Image (tube, rainbow, N blue to C red; front, top):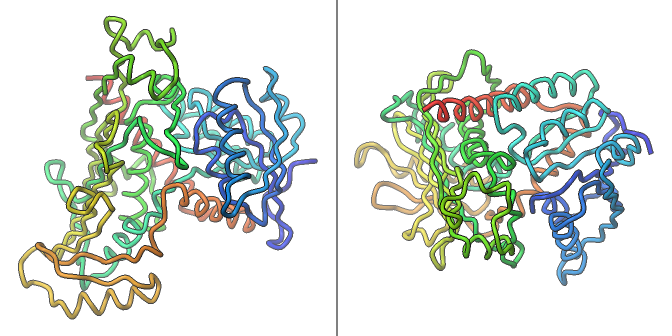
Length: 441
């Protein structure tokens, strides 16, 4: 089967997936749902070992589950020349990349050069050298009329969607503040955990996930989502020029320390692999540079993003997200703490008591409810809490289907929206330059 061209009539689009060296559970989540446009036979090219075995086990789990089982069939190639074999055979037309990030940008570039579309998990670049290759990759994609797109699941979190929607209502939000480095107009922070459940099971992490030379440091990994949300919410559907629109003020990085017992629990390995030795102190303590913070300005709007990785969440809790957008009339705040039962919750907080008529807020929310059925507001200590029905709340895993559906729509059109490529470049420029700045200290 030859590579399909980028542009086809919508009703004849047929996608055949080429999963390249899967090593992260996100690779399997792309296949948690079946899609009419995607062939049920998937071609996998990768290295033999635990990563591939776990990937196949996850897909088998989706195929055998009681509710809405999938029916994927898989053809697997595991010789050492797996990349060259995939590029030579071209049995599919869309490469799915979610795994070890050390060679990811090289895989992206090689796939595009051979006329294949690429649907990639973040991050697509983990350092300055990778960013330069990524820039070339987008040039190749344009030349070869294929698409390169990263999997930005957080755009489909309902509280982030509604925060963005409310920020475009001058009656409630006013206009976006500019802020300052000391008091940013936009702050996005997330806390993650190495020990977590995925699809009902404790996630086994590959040991390389803890090697920042392979996974990437925290400041270029999860912060990709946060930087993307800042761009997406503050300047919706507007192109950003990384050469003129971004100014990075400060960046810092720090470690999370993990003992051998905790390491064994999440990797199922008894000892630290040799490649981790450079991060190990006294043979017992692994130090992972998985935390980072960036203080920067985007088109004159000051923003701060921060990511923290802890080992394990306290009982009854999980990963959390905090976000604030400061407007001239009110702040829009997402909190996910104990008071919210660790469920992301959106608040509208006017700057002064009684400065905003409740009838105005209710009216605007009712208008939004025509698009997002069931939302409402209730009074809170600082203003109003946005009530979001369970029907609008989807899990992180479910968001993968939303991104995949969006990517399929782009394939049908034969192009990405005009702002997506410059904004992907802006995003990875921000993270990789921040890493460079943080390491200079």
